[in-house]
Length: 179
Image (cartoon, rainbow, N blue to C red; front, side, top):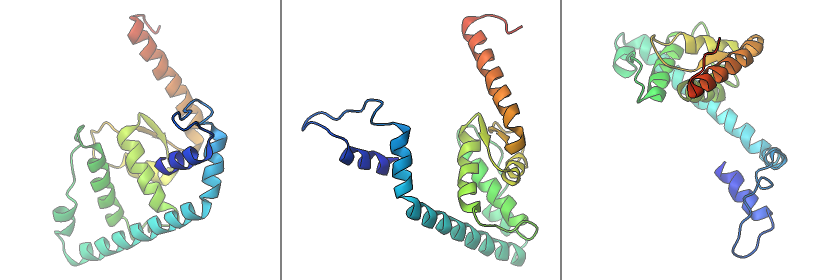
């Protein structure tokens, strides 16, 4: 977003002292135009993320196979901590990927999916991931207060849930019953 903002500042017409940050500055078409121009860089970044995740998990898996206490020393199962939700997801998800590496090896696109899974599950109320990442997040230690994760066939359910949560929130603010 920082790069997009800098790029937009260079492109918009502005007076020497005033920058127009109206809706026109942030229009979706501008974002899509900018992302299109960044396509090669984005694809390279995704490949780099896949490579980094594959290499890390492979090294960790080797250490895990060589030392029975590696996993508990390096990636102990963490209980959920509301003050550190990303750490909870990251450590427990890495642990999961290490233990399941033989059955479910890292594949193309998992680097960015890993990033999305960590951030969205830690900070959102609801998120969409593919079926494999949904299952991985749902396998993390309970209880936790992570986002409710949906995948493709559940998108209608997600919309229903979000609308229901919105109504409940409105009723809570106004003090009226949702019945």
